[in-house]
Every structure is written in C-alpha cells, then in structure tokens.
Amino acid sequence: MIRTLIVPNYYREFHCIESSCPDTCCGGWKIPIDKKTMKKYRALGRSGFDFHGAVDRRRRQIVMKDGSCPLLEKGLCRLHRDLGEDYLCRACRLYPRHDEDYGSVHERSLSLSCPEAARLILKREGRLTFRKYMGRGEKEAEDPASRPLFAQLMRARKQMLSMLSFRERPLAHRLAMILAMSHDMQRGISQGKDESLHMIMDRYTLLETEKGYEWFLSKTSSCMGRREERYDQMAACLGLLGELTEIYPGYGRMVSGWMDVLYRTEAGFADYDRAVRESEGEPEIEIMLENLAAYILCLYVPGAVYDRDVYTKVKYCLFSVLCIREALTAEMALGRLKKENAMGREEAEAALLRLSWSYSRQTEHSDENLELIENALKKRKLFSMKSIFINLFG
Image: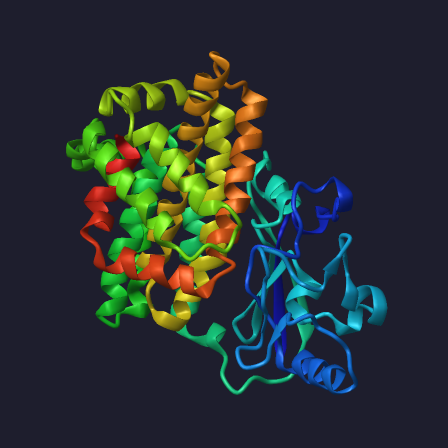
C-alpha cells in the first residue's frame, strides 16, 4: 500500500531549546499511555519500580500531581534517565510532534502547546506550504483517505489557506469568508452530496475577486460595528474557557483576570471600547493570528472525514482566534494600567505567543475540554454564524 506523509514546511526547523524553554513538557496535560508501553509499565511495577502514583492503569494515562508529572526529578524524567527512551510512552517520545492517521495519508505536525513550536508556527513570515513523502506500508482494513469526502476536505483546506493568506484584506473578513464556506459545505455534507462539494468551493473563489468581495461585505454589513454586542458575547466566550477543567496550572485565574480588566470595570463598556481601540493596528500581531488560524485549520479540517462535521472544526478555529485576541487585549490593557504606557510590539508578540501555547495546553491537552467546547459550538446560540461575525467585526 502506498502511503503519503505530509508535513508543514516549518516542521524540520524544530529543535528543543531545553533549559531556555519557559515551561516544561512534563506538566499541564493528560498524557495518554499507548498499549505497548502500558505492558512495559505493568512489568516494571511487578519488578518493584516505583512510579510514585504516576500511572493510572485503568484510564491508561499519566496522572499529574500539582500540575506536573510525578516522574519528573530536577527537570529530568526518571524513566528516561534510568531506563532509556524506549520506556517513554509514545506521546512523550514524540512530543511536540503530532500525528494524524488517515490510512494511506499520514500527517505529522508540531503542537502549538510547545513554546518553541508555537514560535515557529506563529512567527512564520512566508506562506504555509506542505512537503510530501511517499513510501510503502501495510494495507489498512479501512482507508479514510480513499473516501470522496477526504479529497474534498483536503481541497477545502487548501482553499481556506489561500483565502487566509490574502493580506490585502482585513483578517476578520478573511476568517468570515472561511466560516461561511464551511457553513455551506456542511449543508452539502448533511445532504450526502460529498462529491459535489467542489461546486460550493468554486463559488467561494469568486469572493477573491473585487466584485465578489464587495458582494460579501454587503451581505455581512449588518454585523459590523456592533461592539456592545461583541462586549457581551466575548465575555460569554471567555466565560466558557473558565468552565473548563484546569489542565494548565493557573489558567482559571488567568481567565478571571482577563474578565476583570475587560468586563468588570467601573466604566464597563467604555473601558472595553478603549481597550479594543488601543490594542488594534499592529500588522505583526494580525499576521501571528493569521498563522494561528492556519495551524488550527490544518490540524482539524481533514478530521471531518470521521465525524462529517467541518463546520464545527472551523468554528473552533475562529473561537480560538477570538479568545486569544481578546486575552491579548486584556493583557495590553493590564500592562497600561501597571506601567502607565502602551505595551511595545515585542512585548505584545511575546504575550501572544504565551497566550497561544497556554491556551493549547488548556484545550488540546484534554479530550474532556475539547468535547465541552465542541458541544457548546454546536448547541449555543452564542456560536451562530451571525454571532461569530459580530465578534469578528465588532
């Protein structure tokens, strides 16, 4: 069976920065243990190796204590130090490399939750491209990549990235177009018209023309400039982050702090409006948010081949970008309150990096948290297309 490995163009640039890293890989997430490694751990347990309560055998995962792995000693993993890399579970051995298997197509990327990987992902200046490697592998019982829907999703991802990279237009407008396309694609998928989705995508290529762009703006103009509604809705979005099980230590306290500075001030909306206006206008920040959106679209859109729900995948992308943008607005406002002057560009970029990788640890490192967000995106009116447009344009 011919297998194709796909990696982003920045993938091979990654090197662990070790002691220079602002955080550790060995904390702030639920680490799954693969079956093969679990057998080794059971044998180690029988021979007397002390795991310090780190291994949950029933759930097959490493149990964090006070936010870090009990196997971590003086910055080193006891398993790696005493027994070698072969005794690390697959997740620890590969991190921050992330695999997605679609049968004859295999994708490998870097996880945003790693600070150095986040720097490569978000500080990238050129257009995102992919490298493909061909090889042979064992024939799979099922090959999701051979389904008609998979080919359509891969084309959709390519088109979304093309739309996203058109920097002559504001990022909010580009993201809105991508959301609208995924909405129309979802209607086709729900009707079982997988093989005709290309017709929907062809229609959206017209939005790249000046006439098509003007038509789209006329259709969405009613959602523009409604900042008071954005104020209420984004407070609810950050409130959803506050409902998540805490995976990244102190994340709940961070969310509460953002909400205090944006929504719980004496002047209320007036303070919020000023904070938003003072945080806008940095092209480097917009490029980093664009790269954030590209990362999420690349990772999640092909996965719709399994649950047939591309719309929620794209909603998750926009939810993430909006929440991180809002958190940065809060951090910049807080910086002005403390230092009585505006946060510099380099400080803002460093803050955005930190907000992005900590958000990834809080969400992507927990299936439970991802499921909670996904359910909210599907069911709450807060996440209708119109509401998301208001948050983008407000």
